[in-house]
Amino acid sequence: MTLERSELAGKAGWCRRETIKLHRRCPETRLASSLSCVELLTVLFYGGFLRFDPQKPQWEGRDRFIVSKGHGSISLYPILADLGFFPSRELELIGSEEGILKVIPDTTIPGYETINGSLGHGLGVACGMARGLLEKGSARKVFVLLGDGELNEGSVWEAIMFAVQHNLHNLVLVLDNNGGSMLDFCRNILDLAPVGEKLQTFGWEAVTVDGHDTGALALAFEKCAGSATAAPKAIIANTVKGKGVPMLEKDPLSHVRMLTAEQVDEALEELC
Image (cartoon, rainbow, N blue to C red; front, side):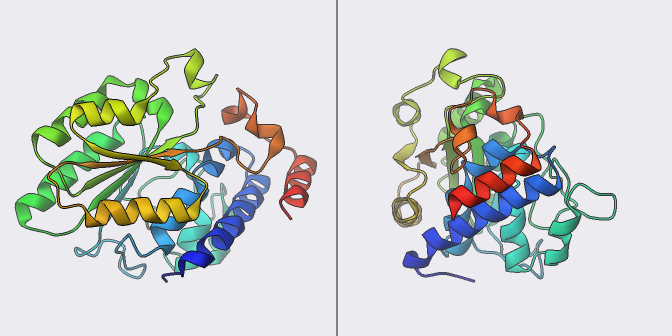
């Protein structure tokens, strides 16, 4: 299902509301970090930039999508259900023994290529997949969604150097640059800004955009798809942790905050 560019923002709004409803059913889910990447996931899956077949999730001709910040990707659940990776009734069963959707996603969920822990390993896995595809002569791409808090891990920077040395031009890093780590703002722990310039210094082709602007994101993905350079590509998407829920947006502990049912209702009313 590919949407027109003018439809992407509306779809993202739908995804944000559905993600908040999931949190009401399963308060253990990481809501704030799942809300910051809503537009990134929406544009990638509905914008025609990712090749997939929901009926055959392991189809060899698919692009690979690695969710490194898996804990904060519950917003991918309604998208996968909407596209037909699994029945929508699974959304009602999230976190239960009867359902397939976990608090922390794993590979039993169609649409998830890998597990997502320890954090900071997703880019290395994506590098391996990207090199393997190139060696096979495949034209398929590997996308990896990374949280900025993961940049504190040394394994990420090893992968950044590896990708350049091996000319992984089929690799696209999408950074959810929401400025928040698990227990504080990133700037108070290890400030890595400006990330885009650092990646360019390492040899990456990087573009920085407003991560909640679906039009800007679509142009960024289009630029990556059209680039003929040998460099790996990176989209630095500046986002807001807890986007759309004011009580989360400025809370340094939003990553671990659970909303009550009443607070969820309040959040949904504010989105309307």
